Image (cartoon, rainbow over all chains, first blue to last red; front, top):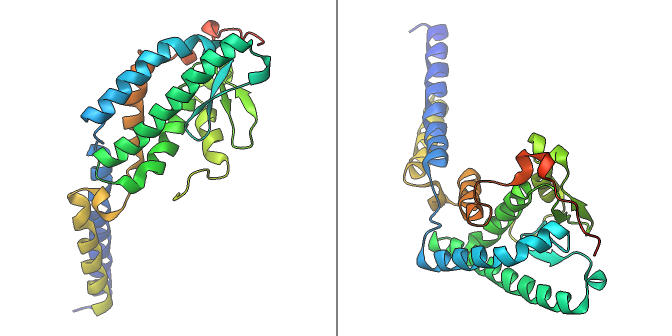
Length: 172
Length: 63
């Protein structure tokens, strides 16, 4: 066999082999869906949705905001009236408890308890990215940022801001 | 020649577990996780957010 022909043949075989190796990975990534409908996860989703109706006005008023690591927090606790603060603090505490359970249960429901922090970091970025204009989010450095109209043009600065900070999640 | 054959065989074998699910080999499907986050987020932000309409941007109250 001609040596040049053989080299070309093996180059093609290598390319085909590479494609065969990569294609299933891409296909699996596209087709794969996480289970977010387990009984435990559904219960938390329902709880979060119900509480959100109470939290929404505080998000819009800038009293509370999202954090880069998947929680919510009071933005300026000292500047809120004491009675309001106590009520909001309780809501924030309950919501964060649910969020923690959500990340843990998602990982468990999908057979990978070790992915809890990966879910947390992904959800954190998506929550910030999809937050309405005017809401606040806290960056990894502790600075609060108000989502501006520029975000609405499709620049996912919320997500990038969350992703660009120092990795707050163990195991990432 | 033998090295190339071996390389191809390794690549093909490496691809097989992915067919049955990438999570079985420790690969975190980031896009799928983002879709999962969106599904959960739809509970609290039905129909998306106001981000598509800057006119709706609420004025923050100074607490």
